[in-house]
Image 1: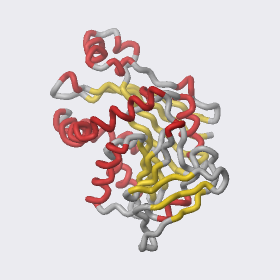
Image 2: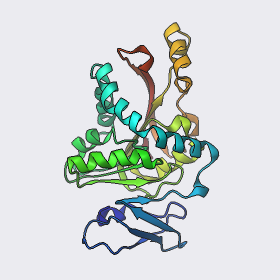
Image 3: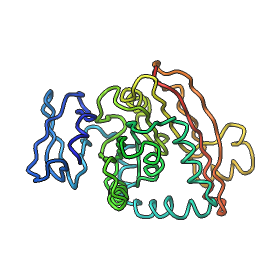
Length: 279
């Protein structure tokens, strides 16, 4: 963790400022240490350069179940999403991710948050937009997933990408911090979607773009033979965009649907995308 990331971070419980305690020799990079909230006194550990803002009391049963699931499947997930999905979709999957990022209208030097980053599949696309002067923060609930995301950032020697462990319902970021926020995959399984959406909007700057993407088929597609097949292979494909749960301080809401087709039919990925701005 680089010390300059502290300007974005706060206590996820009370949103108080954090004080860094570390014995690292480096002036800029912290590999281990503690972050203490100046308001409520809660302490968060930094391990292997990743601040851990996840407390047991923040998790409901559903979030805990998915956290353990993602921990167990981290390796296979990374192989599928980084190698097999781009291959079997004949390049459509990375093209779609790039298009989602482009919708955010990110400028060079911007600050961006990637929520539920998983193994870091979105990072290279966002990094290409913000350049070397921007700042990219990425969080996930799963230690297993973050381990692979960390390997990617270290292999590519990205100095302006920072990882945190947290849950979307208690984001460890200050209000009005980011020029853009993106979330791909996960909200369908969140235990408290409404609170997570409130948090996503809270940490975005005014007028900033927010994009949320997850599995889902439009009501028309659900009635087709192919749609019924996709739902049978993955029940989450029946999910719909949680627009009714969005807070009131958003505007220019748009919802669209599409499918990333694959050479292996049961890995085809139908999705919805929600786009809006913080008002």
